[in-house]
Image (cartoon, rainbow, N blue to C red; front, side):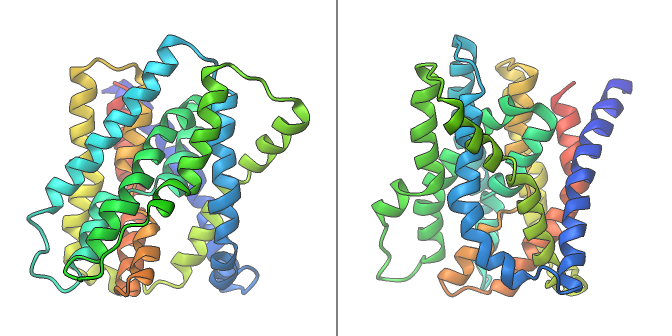
Length: 310
């Protein structure tokens, strides 16, 4: 019990640190210093430049070995299982609801880029980011296939874009970083240093942006969405428990287990809002789901991380 409480305290401090930055973003929006409109206009900077640098930097700073290579493969496999568990858990739910696609998307897809990567770096360092990058590959692959199908379910003109599946920041950054890792390539400092500097922007920017989104969410009414509680049960408890059980069965290392747990236990992805906007769903509802999930994860994430480290 003592070890559990120590681990939970350590993880809780890291989560609390991140939410202090969220609070700064929230305050900045309320004071009109840095608003949600500005954050959304800057979102592509984070999505297309900063996050890819985070992933590439994790490959550059992780030494190649049989253990790290096999660990990365395991992280990918566990992420596939986590997403599959989310899909299966959500399948019988919300089918008679008008916004079933939004609810199911929120169950399946966690906030890997904006929450899991910064938290993994805070708790585990670059090795944690390296393993979480495996989850990013799975996330992008499924979001641009299953996610699009889900949002367009019932429409006759549903089309998958192979270009969007392959040419997205998560997949491209792994395609660049993985060979550098496998062949132990060391880039000149004049190239590696800028990548490192830009990757350092990910955590503060992601949290500041999220704070501005929360500032423009009706926080009072988000508790009235009954489906929220089923989504949280699946996203914040059900999927992490599956991953925890598998990690025990396969006796994964503590670092790999914690990295997989952070990815599995991340709250509903911001993409829930972005995909809802793109495919004509209720963006206000999606924002409330992401906001409440993220609030509750302040408690659930430290608990799951502590359990994974016992």
